[in-house]
Image 1 (cartoon, rainbow, N blue to C red):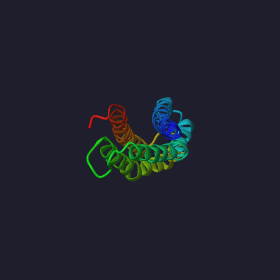
Image 2 (spheres, one colour):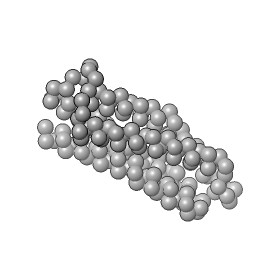
Image 3 (tube, rainbow, N blue to C red):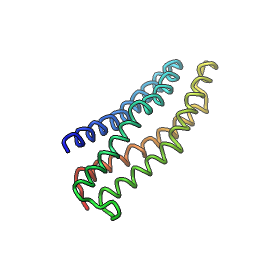
Image 4 (cartoon, rainbow, N blue to C red):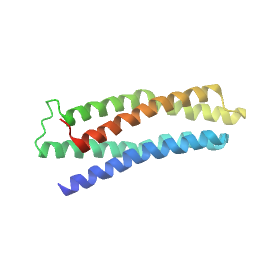
Length: 153
């Protein structure tokens, strides 16, 4: 059980750490108005999701459900585990259906910005949507962290 808990905490660090750090560096890159930095930042945000967010998420879900099962939390009833899994599913849909396509668009439009010598309106629009949906995809897991810590029901 100690290894499951260790891997679960490691998953949380990878998952939350990447969400927060990539958002920070993207904001810094955009604020710099340096077109090369913006383009590199857009590319690295997507790469970091594949390197850190996905493994972190897989560790969180697999070890979390394994520990919940070991402690006897039923997965077919409404409790903090099932609600957390549902919220993770919603976060996954936001990430797969909205954030990943926006990140791909930001890579493409930041390259166009670099070629044109100015940030394009398409990049600004994609970046704004990324911040909105990225914030939502960050707040939901923070609530899941609260549920995991407090176990209110």
